[in-house]
Image (cartoon, rainbow, N blue to C red; front, side, top):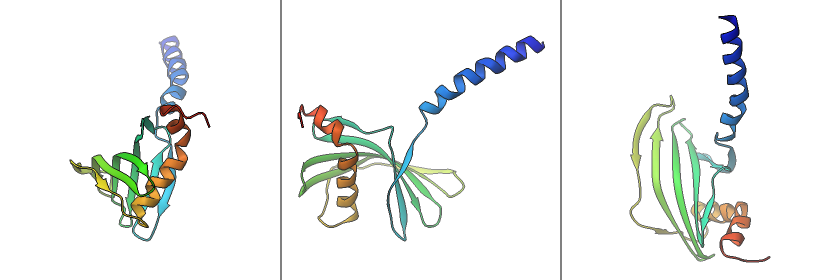
Length: 136
C-alpha cells in the first residue's frame, strides 16, 4: 500500500507543474477608484486586425467580472470593442450571471476604453505583426 501511495504522489508531483502552465497569468492593466483591470497574458490571439483577449475587472466593492473581449483595430480613431462574454461574480466568488454584446461598440477618444485598447495593442503588437505579415 505504501508503494502505491508513493507512486501516486510522484505522478501527482510530476504533473502538478504542467497544470500551472495553463493557469491565468493576470497582469495589471488599468485602475481607478472604481475598478482594477487585469489582462491574462496567456491569452491574446490575433486574426488580422482583431484581437481576442481575457480580462478581469475587480470592482471597488469586491465583485468582479471575467471578460472575453474582442478588439478590432482600424486606426487610433477607429477601434471597436465587443464583450463576447462577461461572467459576473460577487465578492465571495459566487457566480451571478453572464452577459454579452451582440454588436461592436466604437471606442470614443480619450476614454478608459481607448486607453485599454491601445495598451492591449502595445502588449500584443508582436502577434499583430505576425498575423498581418508585417516584417518590422
